[in-house]
Every structure is written in structure tokens, then in C-alpha cells.
Length: 269
Image 1 (cartoon, rainbow, N blue to C red):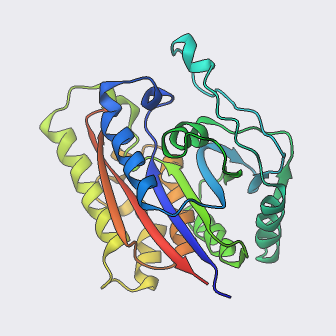
Image 2 (cartoon, helix red, strand yellow):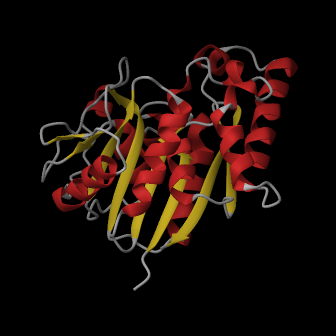
């Protein structure tokens, strides 16, 4: 029986701001709501968050993980957000096994909670909090090839109607977010977004070439301006490693004045 997996890379915005009515996040609220309305309701969700790094890929294995309010300086209501979704230990075990079988050392963590890379976008997409969730860390080497390999290992998962979300940001230069929106900054933002769109969606690019482009993403136009540190881009590498094909759809939102992209794949095994 064929299993299908929806794979989605999202730009998740700044901390809890999408949930606080911030005008600079209005489009991300609309876009994530729109995307959720177009997808099948998943049986479970795996989130690869830019806000969790470990020495080896680590998977939340608790039955009811708490929330981690991993942001600072926001209003008191930011620290009272609730998203009481259950965990999914069986899926966590599958993920751990798939990584280990691919020769990637991995770890289960039954105490770690869900950070805002999970609960902020999911509160917009699936506000009922009734879908079991599991979170997977990045590797703190921040090596692009390692994250492509993690995604390829996840192809072995045998879980129907799974939604895999790479929760990051296609543009993540904190200084630029709060600087004046000069023509030069906006042009750099657009140039990298154009490269990323072509790399992820152009069906004329072979998968060997696409993999090489993502492996050497820092050679793209203004790559290191858009990502001084790459943790918010690497969830995309995991998504592509799992999908192994051109993205079906790109969604766009202007977030904090910057053009930001999101990519969707449907994978059948």
C-alpha cells in the first residue's frame, strides 16, 4: 500500500509575534491558514525546528511534551500561550530507527518540550491542537550535507498521512529586519529568494544538480547576507532530502518587510 507524506517548509516569523496581532506578520497568518486549508488534515506532524540544535539528531519521545517559551522580551501573554497537542512516541521511535538504520547516530528525548518553531505556526494552522506531534532537532554542526542526509533517511518512515514541516525562515538577518528597508537590502533579499525559488521548484534541474546547489547554498547570491547563520535555512534541506524532487508549490509572504518563501511537496512511497 502506498504511503503519502506532505512536506512543507515554512517561514515561521519572529518569536510569538504571529500570534500577537503584529502588523508585520499579517501575511504569514493569512498564508499559514491558507496552506492548512489546502492540505489534508494529517494523522501526525513531524516538525524540524530551527530552534533546536543537538550533537546528533534528537527526537521528542514524550507522550505530552510541555511548551518551551524560548523567546525573550515579549508581553506577558506570550508566556501563557497554550498548545496542548499530544506527542506520538511510536512515530518518534520510527524516526529514531530510520536515522540509525541510515548510519546516522540519533537520540530519543522523552523530557524535551515543543519550542515556538512548532507551537506558533501550528496554533495558526491547526488551532484545535488535536494532532499528535513530534519534533526533530537540527545537528549543531549546521552542515548542509548532513541535513540533506537526515531528510533522505526519513524516506524510510512507514506512516501514512504524515505532515513533515521544516520550520525556519527563508530570510533570517536580524539586523536587516529592524534596519531601514533600503533598496540595496530589498534587492539582496529578492535575489536570494529568486535563487531559492528556482533551486527548489525548477523541474528542469536534475536532482543531482539540485542537491549540489542546496549543499553549496552559501554560494547563492547574497546567501550570507540573508543567512549570517544558517539554522533557519537548514529545515529546508531536511524537507528536500525527504522529498527528493522539485517542490510542487511556492507560497510567499512579506514578513517584517522582507520577502519570504515557503515550499510544498507531496511524496508517495
